[in-house]
Length: 226
Image (spheres, rainbow, N blue to C red):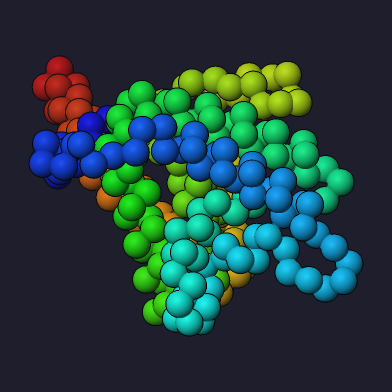
């Protein structure tokens, strides 16, 4: 599936402004923040390391502008007993997705994808006051890979059974739908996080649906002629 033409035009104009291996870098920063957050946890009520990174509109308004970016560094994995296993899964799976997307789109388009997501999440956090999160933006990468390569198989640790990306994508899409329906405060943040997915994947999906519909119509006409 081809990306919209505007992404190619933008790359011709600004192709040098990109961050190579951006997703891998974010994975590394997520792991680092998870480790530092674990070491900073204490029972005296003091703030954890991650608390200084969240996208909190009120604190940004007070001059803590780094939060507009650093929310990307906070992993969705907490500090529970099973969190090391979940973090290992996050690193393995997201690294796999990053290789797929980086190899297909290149570093510039990945950079633009995240830039759109960052702007959308920041605007949403201020316009519909809420604490910004990177969870849904990172999930959108899975949806991209699932649409581009639905039949690619991956073995999810620790389950020794190959699973196609399209089934994983459908599972997470269902979970995201439940979050959207069951958590009204997150609705605007979910929509903002999915904006880059809609801009990058949406037009090609519409074209594919139209092409399949036209092919089916031609087939029906052909059979009718018989």
